Image (cartoon, rainbow, N blue to C red):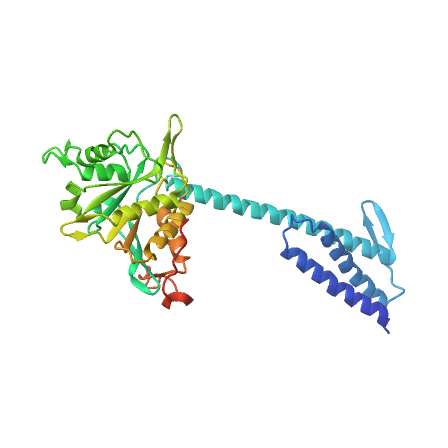
Length: 375
């Protein structure tokens, strides 16, 4: 039994080229117009067994029925393998596309559930009850850092400046609403010691007096007021009210367009805060515009972090070097960790649960921070 060398070489060639085309077709997007490559790959793969068999057994015979037609010999085997392989691959490609689509839709649903909270859209997102502190320091500048703080803002103590995410009308939330503005308004008010009812609306009154005759401010504007009752209870030196959302009659609130400018203005005003004979060195910001403003959490966190990094890496060195982000919900915490872990300029200075390091130190950990261009 002697094989025909030329036919055998052609069989091997068709196998190698066919497999190569098939592997390449798997690597590219199924929707990128690679159907012709797919068919050619199966044509070459179908040639391999035909040429291989007939190189050893030139008198062999094969018959197959395809779509009601019966063919015999080499042509029958070739057509059968090509038809069956192409059909099976196309069916598998459809299944793969459907699986990818389902996975994408599942990720989108998970993202929306995270944004709406554990209730799956039934009510507001549940807050994080536990207070956690996750510090990230600037590489090469350990005295400058971004810190994620979870839980209720009213329980935060020892941070000099609280930044209030406010609307462009500077109308603070009602006392009992679930918002940073309400927490600051009630916490800074003078209350009856027996009933707890507000007797003097100190922070809101001062903010209105700061506006004067102006009914509203430009988006991104930041106004400083005193902390009032928050000074004694939480050790606050000043409140910065940042116009982070813009209201429209009948449509509600939306996040301001230039969020980075809003963050920069808030931190610039925080630099001016003094009290108890000293200047402010720390500030805490909520995630702007993701509550009533309805903005997406992760892009908002990314924009805010980049703006904060620009402040911290500025020259001359800023006085406010400890900037904290308040993560009120699990979705906000997850977004903060994801964005901060991805920042090359930052090195985590904490250990995650289980004793594992927060993240491996990056290559540029020993280099001074780069100054970011103003946007």
